[in-house]
Image (cartoon, rainbow, N blue to C red; front, side, top):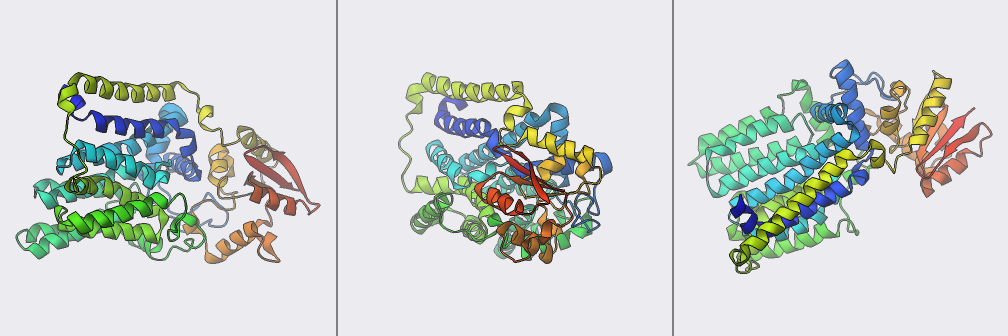
Length: 472
């Protein structure tokens, strides 16, 4: 242990910075999908795995394949044990653990601790939205595990590559990105089969990888789900993270990292395996196709690019042995700071993690529901699942939520016409709903002002987080 602290001090400190940042910004990591996970997890715990939709009005009775049921159940289980802070810590552990595991794989590939630390520092900024609390955050370490096993085997063949298959099985019940993992495993199997010296192993991986995705309570229903979500999602043109990546401040690190990778591969690409030379461009392409995919490229970069930096001579002579005691103290201090902050998270009340979510607004909605048991609510995408989580009685009375894959194209057109006020009859989406709940932003405030021109509409509540309107 002491040797690890002294020899890996710089890397430990950089990883501790990442861990501290994830823990420090936990309140900002709660997004609408966070409430989706908790509400769906509660539904599973109370009523079992869903087969048809019962939580929203528009999609009521539609076939519902909850592919990420395990992630939702885990988040809700953590909440039952320790409240919102426990669910957040489970999320943080997965996000931090993915980076730690990635650094371990990079070191096992032979990269220097300095270049691994440098890569960790860069990858922190490539896809920071990957640290949002959602089912995907639990999938991050599984991607690292699968990619790391494949990359390691491509340099030093070992039977441990088959550990990727049980990882795929668990991953396939956590998040739909498991399809990407299966594609990587099958692709690596093709490369092995082409070499012929490992023909049986390659064929085995090609056959087993897609089958692993079917090891789920939903079994053979899943191919249709993956086809919908991966090939033709009806909501892609409406949801920004599903759209092609464009150059803007938040995506600039991705483009810079991609340019640096191109230069390094052009000069020193032979230090990478054939698998890595195929996988990295493929993951970069996926990042271009949808910004939500950039996180997978950043994690693969964390594992594979440090050896490129070493080949480029960016690692200076390791002088760590000259300062053994200092390095141990610094590394141990960094770990202690992270642990103390984690303890601090456990001692805080759940309310301190929800400064961007109106507790008073939730109380107002609950009071309105109690006053009118037949009340139906029309939310925006940010408030929908938050309302469902805070007021379980809204199940079956909420117009829709962020599971847009359950909605028809016509419903989505009506929804986005409503929020864009882009149609002469734009109000029709909210017809029949007595309460309208929106995030308080300039755009939503303008929308509320337009709605209030109708004498039947009145403003019930407003604070810095939420706007609540009632139709009398």
